[in-house]
Image 1 (cartoon, one colour):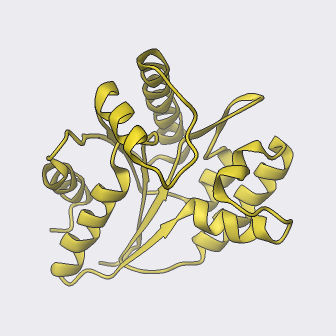
Image 2: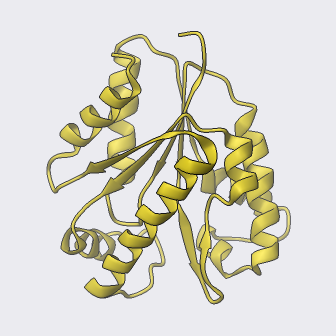
Length: 193
């Protein structure tokens, strides 16, 4: 491959994004493709630790101005990574006390310069069930109406990002027990296998 494909994988918490991303990596590596995988929030957290943040879930409670600085720093670090395919696992938005805040505002999206935008989805009931089972995170209590709103906002933001960056967009459904199908659809969209 001549050019690095920069694939931004997004989805609201509970869609099973990490599972799908892991399967995408496995498939690409098994085909001899060089893959670099980065979790945007982890890079952002490294920057946040410098200002005293102790837990990743505290990031969304920081003032938006501080979050923006951390986002831009993280995107610049990620943009330096090189491989055949760079997989960036992130969120399209963060729910804050000030409202929904874009996870990939224009300066961050420009720095990342994605070639592909993939939204991992699931049904509201699957998302709620997965969030309840995940004891590793401090999640807000939500109802189905909240999940439907979050899914709608995610699609809207993905569409805007595609227009701003020129990247292709794809929606991938990750139904319970079907992560292999979801990852196969995503890999197919990259046109490398």
